Image (cartoon, rainbow, N blue to C red; front, side, top):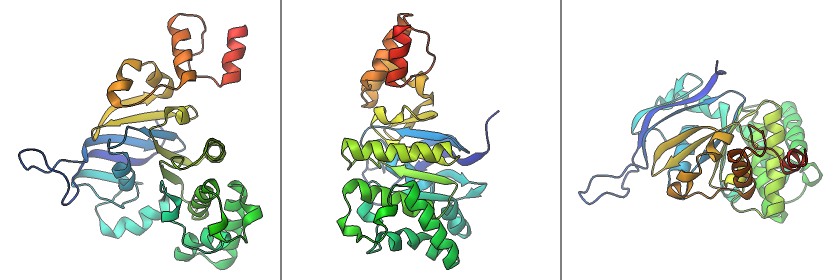
Length: 282
């Protein structure tokens, strides 16, 4: 039995006003008949190559965009009903690909407090939330620093801290590692792993398959449509479709898949590198 549904998309089609059209002049949908659910406490990977519709879909999950056709329902509320918008955004926080787009404070702790201040949270509670969010993201030692002095990775973690301070049960991240170096990417994924372990519902939008090994489930978008949905391990066993979708298989996953297909190891899910080494040694 599935857990409680946090977000549900029902045959969602979205056409950008003034967007691209086909040869007949008919507007080309950025999303077409998209249906899937996000469940409470899961870490869902939303995958696809550039132009697949991932960012458009992400913006539907907290009502930044509303469907042209179909419906997006968050905690039982349709995003199409304007009266629901504020409450939906208090339940689903968004972190964008470029952290510069959502850093508004001049000092780290002030920026982190911006969201809860706009929620009307009492000052003493805001202070406690900021403290917790900066600890979780590893920025507590930089709370008094000007935001412009932060590295790219630190700015991305600051964007996450601002979302965490709002204490939404669901966090949506649109290509959060795209501008990070490998160290910054690993740091952010560690933060997300800790949040997931603590029960946070996370939706990660990415085209980097090596980043999804910690996730519970994946949905693959191609040309604005859902072409695959299932577990991470099952995804990497569908290797024949990856090139068609514009995705590359991470080396670890490819090696695990080949070993599984040759019956060399019996590991139903993709292990960590140390776990794979242990299995091979045994």
